Length: 242
Image (cartoon, rainbow, N blue to C red):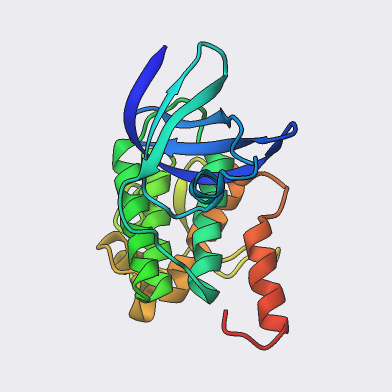
């Protein structure tokens, strides 16, 4: 199989043998997969090194191979690199880690690819981080089939009530509860859930959206913690903004 000129982003790369690298690519039509970039670490291959080792760069790539590990062919810039720094960089690494952990290989998600490109561009422009992250998380759980109706009680089928509390039940959705669970399981105000259901993830609903989407994603990420979150915590400890 040979594929020519496919839009792509590098999610991760690592050295391979003496002079090559293995890159994890996210493409519009072929999903996420690994490819060998042969010889890119040799002296005199600086441009190739920059292209395959730098995330958040829109690329056009060609690749070939019948095995799980493809061979990267032509690789060139498809636009201006998004040079993320500080919190924007950490946020971009968080998005990359979500895709690496949650996407099945060779499973195409063209709408998610477009959402990722839009999110990275917004982060590069210095737009507000939290709304971008929440919108991408919502798109991600929808694309992967994990979404549910934030504005409905999954047990009764009725709309959530603003003055009631709800807990998230994995694989089910939001379920009403009479009081905050003694186990420490998060409970969410119905008013905020209705805002999220209407697409509002800022303002009064911002904190609820962040906590709830983290709980939803955690159920699918497994027990291994996200490294990008650890980086966020370490920068806070050093006095930087989260």
